[in-house]
Length: 468
Image 1: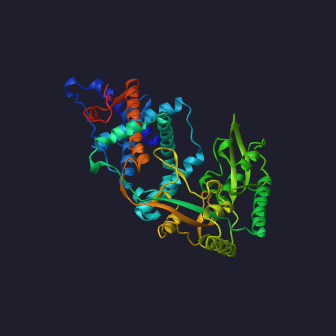
Image 2 (image 1 turned 90 degrees about the horizontal axis):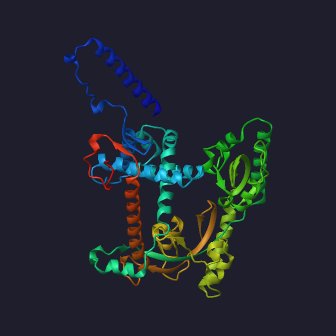
């Protein structure tokens, strides 16, 4: 992009110089203004918000992304897309003032998820590369800064509305005059209890992993290769592997405790740590830099593989426990004390999650919010039934075995204030948060320098005050 701007700037400068030279000799009657057709412009600054430019190419990139994801345009995209980008600039400016940060691993993982999402939409990696006219590696590079900014905008928005709340009376008042056909439709929701058991990993497999990590350490110490190169080639943390294992500046609380204990005690960037076992697997770590209470380091993660025999043995054990529950020897809740998952074990087996709207803990799941393997099993159960043992990938990316019990199912229905108060509260809360955001944007626009090309000044914008 910078190369394009330089080429355009040089071309314009050359044109200006030639024009000035010509004006010395040419009579005024011969001079005519030169109008450059818009279609011939490679790129240009179309808006400026504060000291941040918005380029024509930025608008086209967002338009293309929305087309790929089949996101409908709000009104005229030639007006709405530049405005969306301008609003993002306001949030980014405030995020910088408030020192809001995102880690490199967050960015990398988000980009991977985004690319996977696009591949599912278009059908294959090859089709995505053909549509974008870029390789996957190029797409990743091009997405990096924009996705980082998207995360920063999201965190800034969350900070602005973190203290917003609504009372029960406000919720009831809001829905008193809502037409029946406008009352929200609640999808089927379930409550599920789960017991998980991790298949045992053979000692030989653990030793193999440790020997491999020792070999990597020896190669780095001998100067045969770099830690970053080995991380790219062999680390099973896909989010950081592409960055040479680099995790970005991160606080201690973000890491697994065992990992943090070793990483934060490293002092020499040339040395490689001892082997660290965490809930994710086995690591070696290399210090890059420390800044205050944050550390930037590289790591290589290897995950021991579970044998098929160990998986079948653990499934057989869980099936036996399920049979005892069905026969009444003990309850599912009592059996949950043997579960490997501490979160559900401490909740008598009941699964829970953070509701996106209310950001509060709830045990009610729509089917799409359950882990895929759990949802597939729950869909076949009646209330009170206990499943057969099955395998799943847990939140730490490890293969585990599980049995589940369907505690409750609420079929899809129109929301009622008694049964679905939280759903209705979330709707009112979302509206209130959006009002707060709009008020903040309006106030921010008043105190921000904005300049735009004349062709945008007659647009019907969502927010007022852009045209100064």
